[in-house]
Amino acid sequence: MWLKLVKAHPPFLAAVRVRPDLLDRLWYDDDPADEAGPGDVRLPDASDGRALLAAVDPANDLLEKRLGLGGSGDVDDIVLAEFWTPEQTWLAPAVGIGADRLPHEFTYGPAWFHQPPEVARIADGLSAEIASAALNPGADDPEWSYVEIARSLATFYGTAATERKAIIGGLA
Image (tube, rainbow, N blue to C red):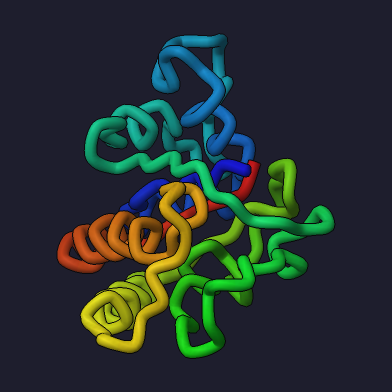
């Protein structure tokens, strides 16, 4: 499964909460800010969603990460791999378990988001776990390795926290 994350300024998160279909424009459109039609991404407050989409920098604000997780069809039903110990608690919220939901479906359940204060807590938690001598490094395969996944997510969440951005995500 693929974890899809976007760092979101508060106006973008507000827009996505009203128009969750904007998320499809980020991941499934060659040019998310293109002119697809009159009013195509017009928001209820009459602002233009294209400007918000254009402000997302794919090189810095998007993350797609292949994860070796098992599940039964919803983010909250994900089975963390057996070598991810219970002490490694910050991966769960980083992949959306327990997060606030958006009315937009990905393959494995709804899109979700974390507000900036929670993003900072998750970044700090992942960083502390990585630094912990008690970490079980997991498999050699980066899709299953807790340490590799946690490093990648800690970096992404850390930059979002520094930029005071929310994170919107989903599992596809």
